[in-house]
Image 1 (spheres, one colour):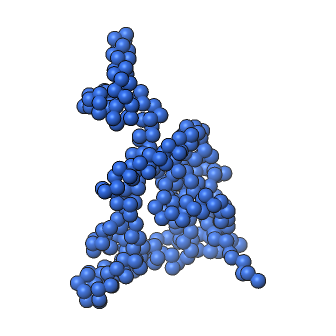
Image 2: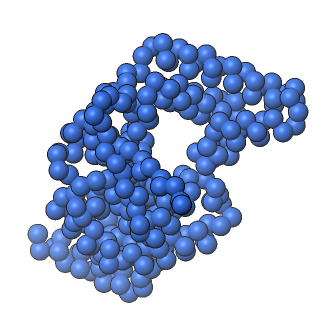
Image 3: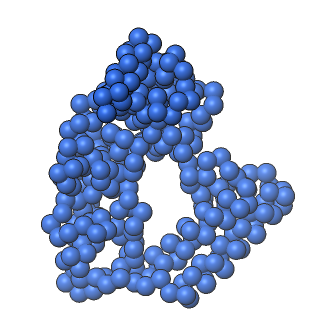
Length: 276
């Protein structure tokens, strides 16, 4: 008989107790969360999903009777103990780079104590210290209870929707009327947005490292900017004309429109200014 797995728990700040976190049955969400780079990005823009923000807001809680919990404070003693251990690891890492523990020890320590995606290819001692200090501190704190994420985003009222694994706060249709309008507006162009992301990666294949999480954020942000320009080229064209630093051909090339369209926009703009 297959052993029944215990559902993970999260902390409800309004109930002030642990609640079970039901695992998703959605193939779409499971596929998204399994992607080491895209799992934390909103489906419709470059911002972080609500879920990824809640994961980053984890705290340590001590279990009490009847499912109640209380927050375990991060004391100076915990910080001091964690810093001492981190200093020892950094010292060993420095020695490892000098070859004192064999040729594979630096790589082993990086894999054991660091997130290679977050390090963005920086294997220096200072980068190692930055990652180790944060991780060791969390590990030392977690020894005094259970490390859990809250079920609500900071500042959200009671009864608010759970953090979305697909969308950011600005695109979650369950978050607010403004977010619902943004969702409806951008959802229609989801395919175009994905195509622009692929296009930018293709054009910048020689300059943007795919292992760099910041490069992924840049590509998504740039694709979103281009998408907004394609959706409302007139307003974007007016902004570029106001700057006065680009020729008609350059504006047309950037927006993906003809020079005639730019020329017509200039005439309309001149007519508007003349009637004021």
